[in-house]
Image (cartoon, rainbow, N blue to C red; front, side, top):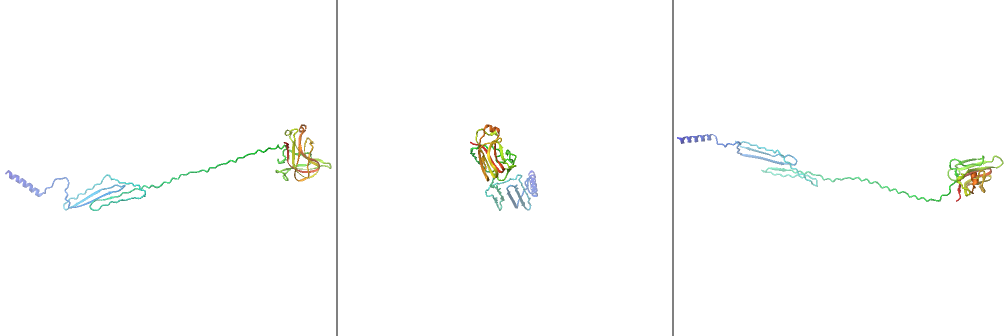
Length: 297
């Protein structure tokens, strides 16, 4: 009887099992695929993020579809920098078809342009100026004695210190008929009566410039176009007196030079030495220029 109960329990369990097929206990799902479709794509790009997606679809009459998707949180980056002298970009593609996954690899070469750099250096070259100073050699010529006559060429714009030897006549500076320079002296005079008068010009010489007993030469250039005189003469004097011998002037229409040698004593120097061009005349017209009184060396 005890055996019969055991058999009956076993039969009850089998009946229960026939009514509901035995299935293993699992927290997952059991999948019996009849058709499998797989898609796999892998992409690697330079300078961008890469996403990998796996998708599986299973279909059956009494099946459960499971879709698994995985996206990496970290995106690898593959960057290749190539320096090429040709400055070109190279792209390499690797493609695999069929049942295997398709992998596309793009390698981008970043061209580093090495252009020649031209540097301009500005150099200013200043012209070199060489100044050659002319060497002046001064040859000292023997200087003659100074001219002791003042305003001998009448170039001072005045006739001073020349003066008339008497009240008669006129003395002036002219610009025509000069021997040198721009001016010359001109004297013209007439006797007031039928008796001849002393007519002409003179200049007092400073006694401090003369030395008693020494010889001095007096010279003058003149034009004597008209004369009614006993003379005239080129001479030296003192006070109202004259030194002998004088030099007589002759009638000339062009310039002629006259010379005389003079010497004073100390008493004559004290009386006031002078030089003269004068004569006892009824009338006198004369041009005088470049009068020189100098020591005879």
